[in-house]
Length: 289
Image 1 (spheres, helix red, strand yellow):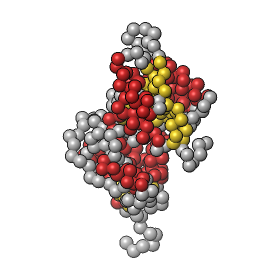
Image 2 (cartoon, one colour):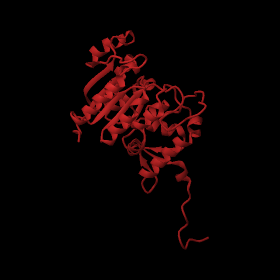
Image 3 (cartoon, one colour):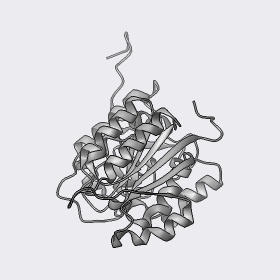
Image 4 (cartoon, one colour):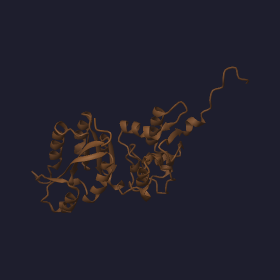
């Protein structure tokens, strides 16, 4: 088990052929909140002109480049090299978690195997990343959503010693609704825009996911701590509120307008399904009619 003070030991493996160099700073920032990134490797055919943008980033962040020539035309061998190294690391260095940066669905079996062996897998990729790969990860973040928290809210919360979910919720900004929202955590819209309340309330699978999580964590009065809620959802499926354009789970819950929130702005922030709050209590036996 990882030391609770130092966090997870993380191995970061980057498919440079399928990842933009300009996002590596945000990826490292995200993973560093979870623990120490002991292993940092980027894979690609570095003789290609298209990978030249990675050179300064590799030096700046101490990422080890792994050369992989293409063995046949129109097919690179980067994914196979990454898979082989990931398996070796799993049984030798035994990191607590892996960061996989790619938009290639070919990594889906690898992710499923790593998780089956007890390692968390944090995926990063473009919005067109196939959903099987997204859903296989412990958590998946779209690179388009890694643009920093609005107005530095998350940083301010961490500086105050409060979790980001303790921040008060804000109303959703008006944005044109998408045509369809697929599986929870995988909205079909630009990740940098907030999904408006009307679209969230039409996303039946998202609301069911949130409501079922509240039911699983609620106390006798129907209240569930948002921190426990996030853990329950994370254990069930790959999910991150930022993929809907909201900095925290609390903000997403508030934006749906389907839940009550209390103790906002504190680590004790809790949520309750509004339908449960409206459910009338049965009359006491012997009460006057």
